[in-house]
Amino acid sequence: MGGNSQPHQEPRRVNNDPRAKQQKGNQVRRDRRDVHGWVVLDKPIGMTSTQAVAVLKRLFNAKRAGHAGTLDPLASGGLPIALGEATKTVPFVMDGRKRYQFTVCWGEERDTDDIEGRVTATSDQRPTREAILALLPRFTGVIEQIPPRYSAIKVQGERAYDLARDGEVVELAPRPVEIHHLTLVDQPDNDRAVFEAECGKGTYVRALARDMGRILGTYGHICALRRTLVGPFGENDMIPLDQLEALCDRAASGEGSLADALLPVETALDDIPALAVTRADAARLHRGQAVLLRGRDAPTCSGTVYVTVAGRLLALAEVGNGEIIPKRVFNLTGLTASPGRNERN
Image (tube, rainbow, N blue to C red; front, side, top):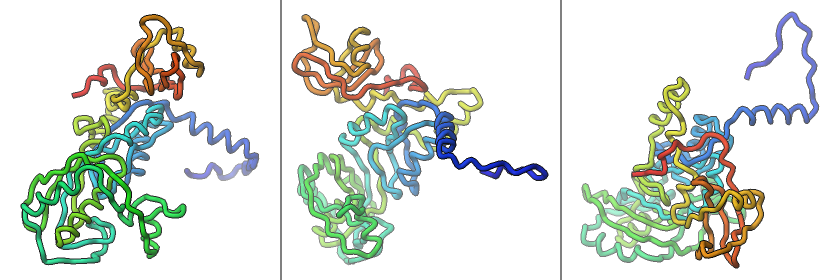
């Protein structure tokens, strides 16, 4: 921002009281709005996940935002971004399945395992369709995978990609990951093959391309990557950035509402049982107090549930030993998803 000094006037005295700075910071925070829900951005190629969060936070003028699983800058597709109270449900999305469509370019291995890296090995061999299909079962189920050197995994407190960029040799230990499905979608030419993979948390598609290339004797790296599923969020939920910006412009002129872009907070909890309570019990849970389960209508479920009152999300809780114990309470005052956004295609 520009300075506030004005010519021909006495200069203002500078207030170095740290409390004044804190009050100024609080004023900035108050200007932001309470916005609660999920936006599944169809992230464009070239944008980092952190940049995407910053853009959405600005568009919605939201107080809090975070994403549910990093998507590489070279990748496009679903990046679920949690706003406000939805940030409390991020772990449930991150633990869900992911689906990717990706293209492997044969003949070169690169230090980043994608198209941006430096070539480290080459081969004139190219795999046949039969060889690729025969290999796929070896990469299905629970497998051991060594993450890429250029990854966000921490090594003695440092990110692996930072160490690799500094020229250090990064040795990452193999770890188990689960690949539910791996299929060959297309083979447009001898140099490329298109795959679809559905996998669990912690799986690196770049490492998958690297390892398949090595076993096939041809080497390989990712040259295109798109994420089509993250937990409960699929392609029907995605919204491109330009459409989101247009919606924000219409909302600013009074022709629409940003709520139309939001999915409800509880969308992230699709796999968790819902438990409805009375308003009296809701008041206790909202104060952080446990509620006893009584009578023949008491639920028989146990474990994690999400609690609702009058159809509205109230809390995440644990059910056991005859009581409901609140773990995370939601305060959904502010902008939330439009009515009907629970009805998804």
